[in-house]
Figure (tube, rainbow, N blue to C red):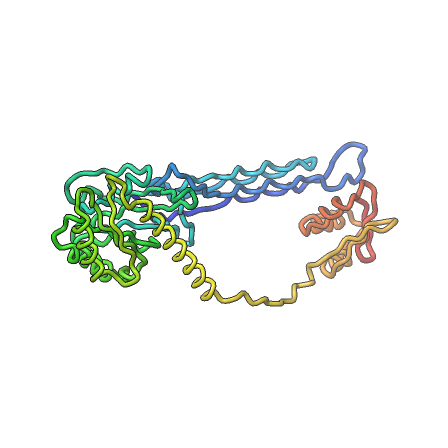
Length: 371
């Protein structure tokens, strides 16, 4: 089953809990804290894979959670970090608040049996079902196409549209939604059609009737299946298409079987895709409000600083000094409580970083404790 949209709950791993621990060893007085830091949680990483062409795996897997970090231990033992979770997704997947996928750079559209699947099978490694009857393609087929070894484009073979598709006829407007998320269209018209103008208009009207007008999407109009036709017939059919195609649309004639006109088609499509992507980036840049720096005053009450002096480590800060002023330094329970506060605020970690050793003095306001 082809699935190109999925809503999934994604959650990185939680960080583990740090260890609150003090050394309790014989003959070591006031050993100080020795709890280890916790491990960090794992990340969820989306990996673009050319072996994936659908989001069908997420039909039933609605939750994607990375591994959490493990808690720290005694003796400053660091908890194990959680492993990252690698999630394979198709090339071109876009993760947003509500996950969805830009189906392709180029969409192949046209009436049933216009030669879309055959063309895709020739220009890419895709192997869509090909048969001489309508609606052979029931789901979009994707293929990666290299153009002159310079750029790679993702092509989508959109199931054949018919008159009334926007109203639900045939395969319905479900596949017009796929067209909506392509940058450029290649509109194939069968050269053996008696009324190539009518065939072209039918698809254009359906594109226009969709909830978002898709008829103005940049497109190349390609007269397909020209193998075996005289040049005069090909020119006549192209002249008819020129009357109904947009003035800025590129017209060409191709044969998927003989590959006539295929290289030129791909080069023109590549240029259009690059222009369209550049235009989209420019529009996005123009409509995105410039970030305005907001200056705020941080709450200085919680701020603290550790300074290493000749005879002691000095801790300063409004909040920690207030705690120290209320501490009875002759009461072991009161001192232990102050140590806990220092641990939670990260002061102990900073003391260790600055090289404090067992037995060193720590001054906070008018009080002093031994590490």
